[in-house]
Amino acid sequence: MSKKITLVLLFIILITPLSSPQIINAYGNRSANLYLTSYDGKVYLGNLSTNINNRSSVFNSSGGYGSSLSTKSIWNQYGLYGSDYSLYSAWNINTLTPPQIMFNKTTIGYVSANPYKLNAIHPAKLWNFAYTY
Image (cartoon, rainbow, N blue to C red; front, side, top):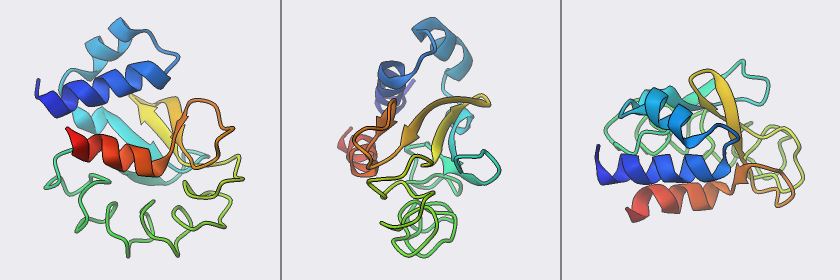
């Protein structure tokens, strides 16, 4: 398992209600099992693979889920999921309905700038975490 995948695993273990063995057994090195959806789970917003060449990764700035121009990106400051004002945005400090972090079809946390949202990571910290290691 690569260092980046291991670190993402450690992060997920810290914010999730699932036990560490459940995550490690199910996650392994399959980063596509870790992904974002809209709060209602109806819109796929990309996976959390730190491989920037992965077309579905939220960290691929040229991809459909990582581009600042994509309608399904948390990095699009004018979009539904990246605006400071949208109720469904990771960047709205007041939202109660930010994007979900999913693991094998189970919600394990949220990406939200709302400091009061439980089990949430700020989108900027998510970005820094992925690119620091």
